[in-house]
Length: 385
Image 1 (tube, rainbow, N blue to C red):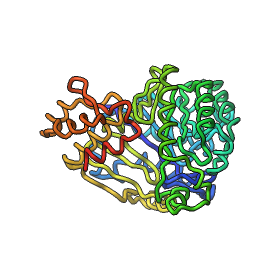
Image 2: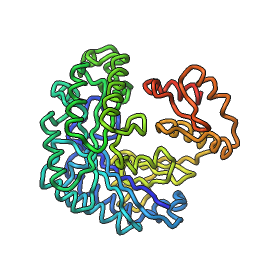
Image 3: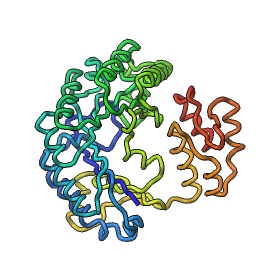
Image 4: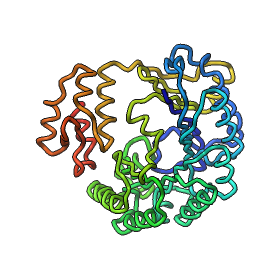
């Protein structure tokens, strides 16, 4: 059995206005103690978790590592190497993919070479946009010129597996600026691309301002829902024309470059998370560490488990996850297998959605209709409601 490991680094240079993650700006004096706590959590996982992680009782190999955040590329290269060495020392490893999330302005030739030397072979670059006006509006630290510079530095260091993230719906975004961002992405031709629709909710400053009808953070310049949908559809068209495989609602890859780690989440395969706010899943139970980095470090330093949430996944919840996560993948789900595994009759529920054109069948395989991906959430609400 292969297992993925996620390492959470919650530190940022600044908090972007749209961010709804449990990350933030912390004193750099916390960085080394935090890295030490992560290494200790890795080394002492069995004692800290007790019976919480059945997967750790099994004979498994770690084949993917994902270092996310936050801005883990902000850490010293030696610190990242220390964490990866702790993974190797704590588990049997045969790394196929080691991903580091990076902001473009943090990438230098020296850092890129050091990352590659530690075993990092994939970088997820938080480009978000190629428009400086959009980047400034949401508080990003980089500018458009930093993106190709970072890409060159990574390529020169031997890291060819690079992913660009773009966000459709940023304040001041127009059809023209979106077309330009897509064009510049395609010109650089990363191995992977992720396109996300801007989330407007109470979890971010921009979201709260937009919901209140305010003007701060350029909330009044957020494109309409219809515009965001058209931006997404344009990305689907252009990426397909340039040989990118659309394999998950928000993800495209050149052949052979799908994210091996993220696929584990969508397939409900086991993964272990380390660090403040990290989540884990062993196939039957989910658990999560406390979010506050200082509290997390204090727990680890005193030999206490950092886990603050734990949930046994019921058969009904597992079935919902199979449907929700499976349908996010463009290949869809094998309905007969799921009905048999969960002793459930699902076809009548999907027939209603098929009649309205939201889903389609190909034999016994079911998937979201390609023309309705922008309303996927409506399908999930209808299906799981």
